[in-house]
Image (cartoon, rainbow, N blue to C red; front, top):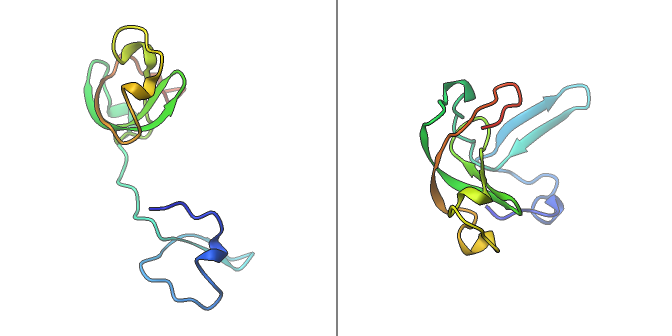
Amino acid sequence: DDRIQNIHDVLRKGDTVRDARVITVDSTKGEVGLSLRNPRHKRRDLRTVKTGEALEGKVDKIVPYGAFVDVGASVNPLLHISRITGGAIENIRHHLNEGDPVTVHVIGLDLEKKTM
């Protein structure tokens, strides 16, 4: 799961790649895109999420104003910094980090903007 900065450090022309999946085919350029990552699980359609619902997830990304949480839906909701403890927070990383399990309660949905 380590990020590769330069593919040429890992693969050379003629190498055999096991467990790769084809993700794109461009017949006009004669190119095939491969991925070594496991495919993502099917994401839940945002239209099936209900306001007031509690969702289990994991912190995907920390930003200065909160955290985006992967809840298995087609979008990752923002957990605003003001809702993490109910009070002021100086450093969000004192409370949450990427990968931490959390339960979030959906307080609003916007299907046009694709946000929750």
